[in-house]
Length: 469
Image 1 (cartoon, rainbow, N blue to C red):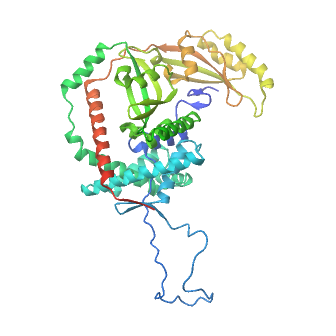
Image 2: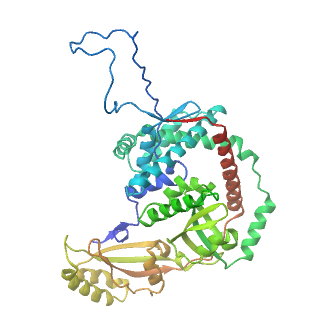
Image 3: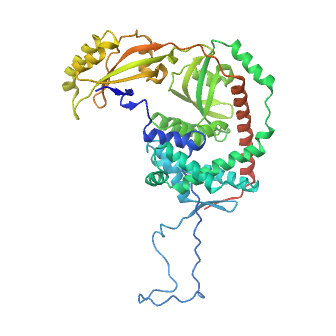
């Protein structure tokens, strides 16, 4: 039976899994990037004294002055830090950490988890300072605004607010903690809108100069880079390098680069997951440019010594300035796939794979794909709107070399099935138009706002009274 939607190694190209939605919600910008935070008052405990009133008779012969041995009441929220009088509890930290861990597939354990927890606490302190500054500026976020944003986030998960609240609880977080984070994001944005953005200016001549340089550099290589920057001094150099190497190790094991950038990077791009956007080699420090030129999309490099510390970079993608990229070609594809019983061995599957390969090899045109699938006992899935760059890197070059009507060799695994793609059509990539005047203006303005926002936050930290408990 023919189905709509294309699957590569079992992952639907039409929708994102819940895990991927969580990662996107937790780590990218705006309301969609929210990760759990919390705001809970600590419960004050009054020590017993000789003048305390006598307790009512219970028949249990309880002492009036008692000492509790062992764990305290787990419902009591202990303070982790008090920021200018505002309390951050262990629960606050744990609930935010829960979503960060979920975004990384729960792969972080041991010492690395403890280090991440400390970073989460630092982030919560920054958030508290931001909310306090908003209140100082008479900026308030209404409950209705927070609820509306929470509802939109829930809708992105295809859940009602009640279902989403239950989901957050299952992750070790809560609706209240997420709403607190929503309030913090909105409050800080409004502070910047009042105190920073009106004083940031971008001249038309500056924008036009960028446009002119873009046109002059047509055909030059551009790199879409993510960066994690860790600052160091001569005294902390070894410690910072060791921390950078630990982060590299976790990312290589499958942890989210974006998550680590948000938690650890000290660059202004931390808020957007370390995304530097599209840059040319001459626009970034020479050590980063040299590393980027050796990478393929998806690869990471580091720790790289740079002025003031160390950087870890990931090459998201690369292209040529104002030049059509063949990987932007849009393909019409048919996918044929066969599956194997659970527990099948390579030896038992080999004959079926060999037969499938022979049948696929004999396809000469998309019109034969359905008949070939029937002969091989394969399922057919088709899609008429797949960009080459959206395919796994191993398939991109292969698809660019195919002619319409040809099929790829089989690929896949015993667990997720073996597949082959038949190219039914190709719309070639159009020449890149480049960013518009307004797009460049907005980007330059945002960069300057971010730099001033970081200075603003540093001033708040410097003036804060933080009592760690």
